[in-house]
Length: 131
Image (tube, rainbow, N blue to C red):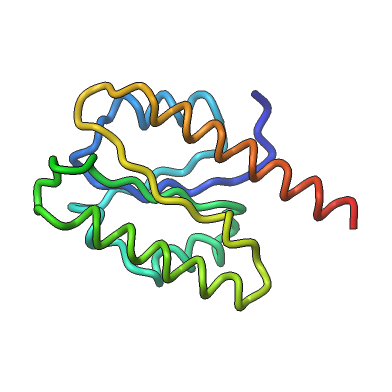
């Protein structure tokens, strides 16, 4: 899959490394930034990724019930919702930011969800180019 879009993946250090690496290989332009816990990812981190040239931002936390820090993934998910509101106010599509749960073991569906996210980003890019 040819990647002309820069995508930032902000994720918990405890999430499955193999899935993160698979994603980077499949989509090419994925820049991965790991945090001690996805709960440490702030709205400003998401906005910084856009300022640094990301077309889309994926935030990934441990799947429900397996967060090392108990509530980190839920905190990150709420912050993504806040970031969506802010980027919409700035004139960007809120669909350019998404939260994903990713297993510590191979859950398989994260890469598929990320590919779907990438497909949505491509549609946004094509729509922008058509205007």
